[in-house]
Image (tube, rainbow, N blue to C red):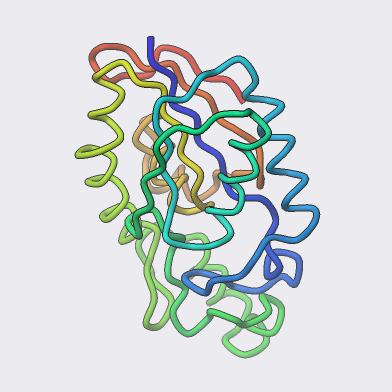
Length: 199
């Protein structure tokens, strides 16, 4: 049965600084690089046939470190469909400063509701509307062919995938926290449904 492994990139500079990152391209911290190596430890024994990542450096760096640690060189497909959610006017702001500027309640709604986007940004629902069609036309096709697939992306793009795989509602998925550099490993059946999950 094919394996689908989802990994959120390691800690980035702006994760460390508690800033909204979104589409802004920031590098990994040293801790983030270590998290990528630890992710590789958790994936030992799985041979990947193809890897997917976003158009953003922090995900690409995580994938490169992970694959080097595994000693694998599968083809890598980069696509902006897997980018982090766009945080609009919040991008670059420290989360505590944003709460002071817009009000704690309002920032909480933007961060934790499924369908309310921040100003000039994306809601999780909007993120899912670009991630899931990409999954259907690319990643799911590889799984149907029996390929083991590695996806290194972001908190919200991976959340969209977990929502589909675990059959979560929009209300449930907003409470889901994905740790940086911790793989979720799914076995996928011939019908595209999840047979088992670990991580």
